[in-house]
Amino acid sequence: MSSKTQDEGTAVAVVGVGRMGKHHARTYKQMSGVNLKAVVDFEIGRAQSVADEYGCVAYGSVQEMLESHPDVNAVTVAVPTQFHRATAEPLLKRRIACLIEKPLAATVADAKALVGCAEEHNAVLQVGHTERFNPAFRAAEALNFNARFMQVERVSPMTFRSLDVGVVMDMMIHDLDIVLMLAGSPIKSVDAAGVAVLGEHEDIASARIVFENGCVANITASRMALNTERRLRVFSESGYINLNYQTRDGIVVHTDGGNRKALAKVREQVAQGVDLSDLDYKDIVEVSELKFDLPPGEEDQLTAEQASFLSAAKHGSRPTVDGLAGFAAVDAAERVVRAIKEHTWEGMAGSALLNGVE
Ligand SMILES: NC(=O)c1ccc[n+]([C@@H]2O[C@H](COP(=O)([O-])OP(=O)(O)OC[C@H]3O[C@@H](n4cnc5c(N)ncnc54)[C@H](O)[C@@H]3O)[C@@H](O)[C@H]2O)c1
Image (cartoon, rainbow, N blue to C red; front, side, top):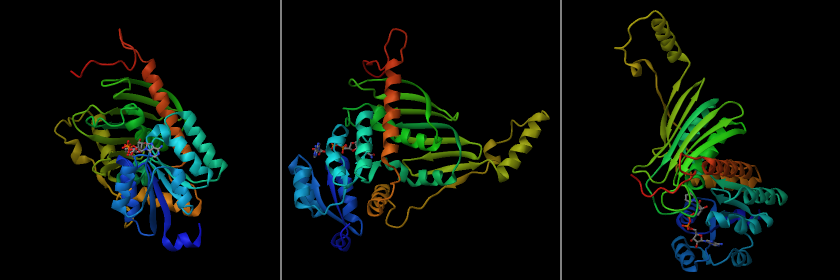
């Protein structure tokens, strides 16, 4: 990084300023020590309006942007997923650090190529799995529980966006990244079912993933729900975690201390045949709040993600969510989609198109 760049702050750009890219531009603009130089979108009018709002320069292509701003050394890539590889490869080849929105790529082959390109050119590649920076998840992660069983729901009403991909690549990918990380073991088997309601891709999916270490994750994703719910439950020997990604909070029940004593007592009473039907289970369990304060200035999880990315870019260090993690999530998603296609109901193929929701 040149000293000129350090003096002015890290020179960054955003490629693709649609729904997600606009948020990236806004948060970069608000961060201290960061100099948002340019936004790129081949819809030049869109790029121009974002550039006007955040005081930077608009370009219609990455090439033009690099010709005018060779000092840009960190870029968010927020174009539609199918264009991630074509957009990011020229940047990685110039050793420009890339924060590529999730999923890393639309196919395992593209994801692998991006990881290979970053490695070959020694460029920093981070993947935008934003939930890793959710304070509730950060609190859960800090507990370091050995996950044995996970129950995950991510459901929301239809937004009529991202219909070019199914709900697995669009929404479940967040949870695949999280469960892969918490399980810390390769996938042994995947069983899944799903249905396409509006188009050719699945809109509702349910997967059961078994890991080689015996950990099991049951994950449900739907973009056809009436309410929004994004929840993770983790069961382990050390305790139980129930977190809400949306409200960014949760609870933890530890299996040691007071809970161990209380459960030992109840176990003894059950063995003695004592009638406990009047006992309120919730009165005997000690519940603690899941709490994690993001560092000042990073209270917003996208800002925390970008701060982590820029730190990796500055020091050339391994990012929190690196290319391999992004690749693993895409690989798992492809396995889930394959399992959905292989699943059959009597008289109905997997990922069948339902004619309306009853
Ligand atoms: N982290 C999250 O929670 C989250 C949420 C939504 C979307 N995303 C991801 O962000 C990415 C973008 O999604 P979106 O909903 O913002 O899409 P979008 O369609 O709203 O925006 C994409 C923008 O990229 C532009 N574009 C397309 N191809 C381009 C190219 N080759 N060069 C320059 N600009 C180009 C389009 O004109 C458009 O303005 C996707 O990968 C998506 O999966 C992540």
